[in-house]
Image (cartoon, rainbow, N blue to C red; front, side, top):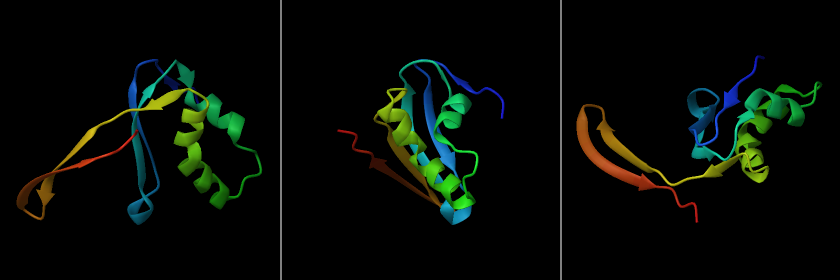
Length: 96
């Protein structure tokens, strides 16, 4: 993997997986500039099994928060509807 620099103040969401295993976390704000690939290299071992890598991908946002690299931020999620039906709704995350 190549460098993947996150700039201080940048707003990011972190996603992994596919289909019903898709996970999206965030939004977060970068507390300082850091290289995401370099960080992953510090927490990943070379002999990890695929299930361990999947688990690490899920845990990564909290690891970044714990290390002070990103902080959680509030965000409004606004849904416009589905299946040709316009139905405006909202869901809020509680980050207190």
